[in-house]
Amino acid sequence: GAVVSQHPSRVICKSGTSVKIECRSLDFQATTMFWYRQFPKKSLMLMATSNEGSKATYEQGVEKDKFLINHASLTLSTLTVTSAHPEDSSFYICSAATSATNEKLFFGSGTQLSVL
Amino acid sequence: GENVEQHPSTLSVQEGDSAVIKCTYSDSASNYFPWYKQELGKRPQLIIDIRSNVGEKKDQRIAVTLNKTAKHFSLHITETQPEDSAVYFCARSRYGGSQGNLIFGKGTKLSVKP
Image (tube, rainbow over all chains, first blue to last red; front, side, top):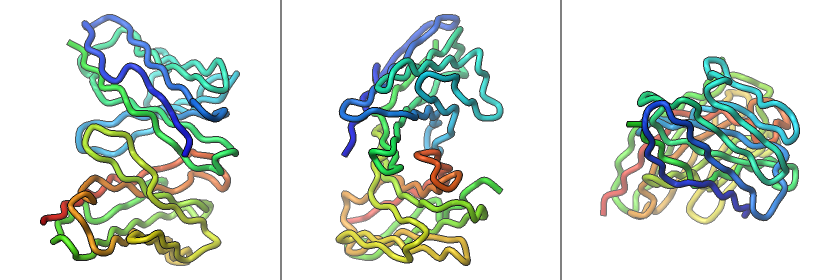
């Protein structure tokens, strides 16, 4: 199956700082990447859809100025949590799909963000 | 609505028994229905999927059935083993041919007791 790599796996930061999370498709070109947020024992909440070379599409209620998404190449998308606060602490997970994977969605390993 | 209703939220079975998880949806445009397994702290893994032109699909101990008319689909796990213990998520494609844009159910925590 397709491999999606996500880094870092865990980050602890101080309130007010920014954190960047990278998501890479290793063996395929991902025209579309998705960013999810997952709270403990909860489902995957789609935050935004990222298409290579264009602006991300954010879900209702997600602050685009707080969660900056860049999809600069067909293999890399980044999520930057700006001015992080304790309520931003969560498990963030990316995923990628492409016509080459026939619509199947493959997930990165996730990033556990803890804001102190 | 846009949501996928998934039941039950928790399921406990004895090793060797079968487990069934059901999801319902309302958007008739959905044409792709995957199931993901997520172990604690790990990424969701695709375990089986089905498209709307098929009523049933099986892969060893796992099967998925789809009733497009009634708008529900189910995951069936037979001869359960302790390593099947995990959270299972159903999902539906948000649009026809939406290339990965999925709406997820709230998950079912399956516990298989040895």
